Image (cartoon, rainbow, N blue to C red):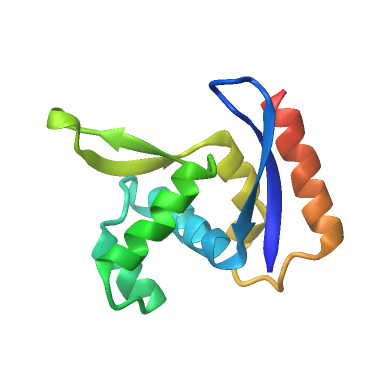
Length: 123
């Protein structure tokens, strides 16, 4: 299942549409719940363990895709290394209905509501 969110490109100022897969929304929801519960970002091994991913590179690719799609923002430490990620406003809006526990898949009506809320937040 794929959801499309319209985001404003920070460089050109134009809107762009990036598809966010259901698995990426699950990773984003887990990331948000972890940040809320522990007040720090999970390490890659914790993401791998939670989702049953055998390689940390697989978890890193999910997180990098979410950064590319505007849902997460990297936090850099000294030396320019990425030390974690924070949720952007788009990421918060995308996971609002998902933080309430195990919900059934988002319907097309709910997807339209998410898109509308995201578009209002970007403007």
